[in-house]
Length: 65
Image (tube, rainbow, N blue to C red; front, top):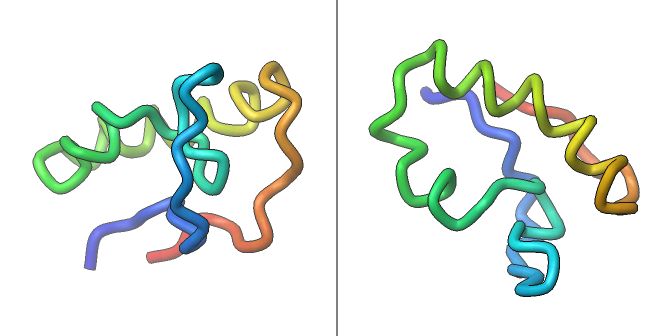
């Protein structure tokens, strides 16, 4: 199974350019299954900083395997 930061709160925020549930961009979501493990890990590592910069609350569920 592919590691994913999805928390099943799928709602794109056009002004922010990200999903308010996982904080990924639409491009990242679309490419997720095609990304390498290293690319996915890099996105996951960036999400807390992105979430804080956008003023979004912490997710209800951490990234899962």
